[in-house]
Picture 1 (cartoon, helix red, strand yellow):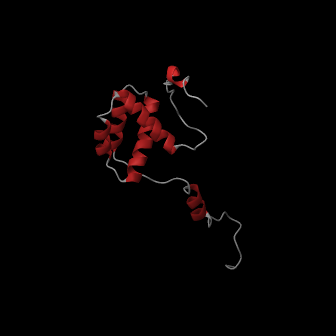
Picture 2 (picture 1 turned 90 degrees about the horizontal axis):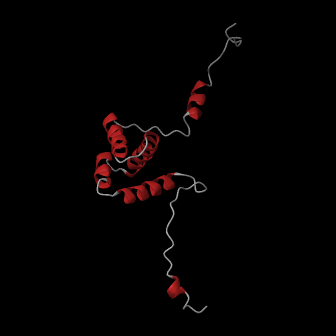
Picture 3 (picture 1 turned 180 degrees about the horizontal axis):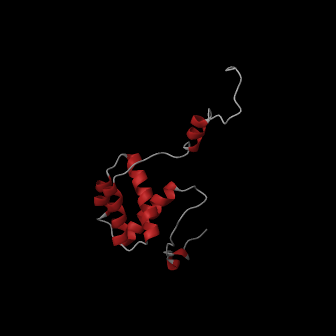
Length: 121
């Protein structure tokens, strides 16, 4: 009788399910001090809580990918003013997003129309 399958639930496909449930999720771990430091850095500079956590997650993941220490990254960012920091954060977020969805900022028109009128096409 042991050659016949039982009618009860069989869980032989559980390892396959576990593999595909985690297939697109890279597991990356950070220490609590790293996460708190990055969150505090952006909170202190006036970013909202949601923005801070989103930027922190992206920066931590990129730092881990590039092999850069979190605190070394924060020391580098401390030297930037608010405009430079916003531009850098925009570039980092754009780099980690799909190409059809990018963030941007408006560049003022710097064309000098006095000189432009003298150009002959």
